[in-house]
Length: 482
Image (cartoon, rainbow, N blue to C red; front, top):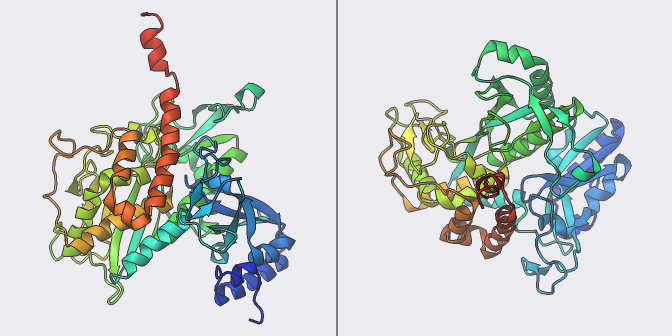
């Protein structure tokens, strides 16, 4: 293994010889190019990047032995509260005790090394999670997606995914840094708009914010995120970026890096970028994440969703559609994992609220774009929102579609009336999505009972805090009346 970084990660089977050799090459590059810090980060259960910044000179050690982080990082809800009892004997995951808040290992994936354009002395490496024994952490998001893509590959297919990501950028009026605002979760920022909105895809709106969108685009290009278009969306201060089609892991990595990059760049300019599904600011429009997906034959390299006749699904596309529909309620916990996400499911707003598909129909949950001879033929799932963990969300797409493929399932007829009340509804609340997920035989079998219990526990903690909060609606409804 000349020219390779040997260490605990290799000895425990967490690195291949090629990865160990690539690690040595990367450490040499970091030294030669004068990087000062490297951020070793992992996407947590919410798709939020966590980790440590290390001095660049210590990178070789981290690549050889990994980097320790507290196991409580995978036990936190969206308020960053640890919601599992780490002081109670019997808290286990994958048969490993998590009692006592011991350490996990970050396992760097050197192929994800990404210099940061807005912080040129620094770079990011995305990591997987393992226990100190070398056993992989089963709920590690990149690992969950990797197992889903491997299961699909065994059928002779690879998935191709495309991203459309909506978000808002607001000017900050109150930065939330007064002492009484340092709550858990922290007090929401006070903001104002950067555009007035309601001028969808207009050049004048684009021109007003072109310097900001240029900076985001240039950073995305420099990071290898492959942006395709930068668009003015419908709502005030709302924008959309789309990206080149690619494999699921690349797209999930792009999503978390893009979300982080946008927030970091905007913060440096006194702006606040939000990917919240339905912000509670006057006149705000909901943010969706449209997941485009198709299958390519490993044998022929052809898109098996490309039909012979416009609009008519191939057998593979029909089965994939049927699988996505059959498992849509349960999959909502992966595509719409927050309390707030279900406020987006409203009729006649170009967001779905029913379980159905339609041919080029933007109100349907699944919008099919299937054209004879078109290698870009695909299915667009419009259910997801931008607070999703992209690794879990894309794994859910693959596992649902794969189930339909394995069963040779057929879809119902397409809809022309996507908001008709006689069609099956998507879950109306996070609680309903949790229940559907817990009852799903597919996810218990494909992801394991540990994963189902783990994610359900996290989301029930979030739901419980929501129910315990006295809302403005309650105050207005009852404070004067009684």
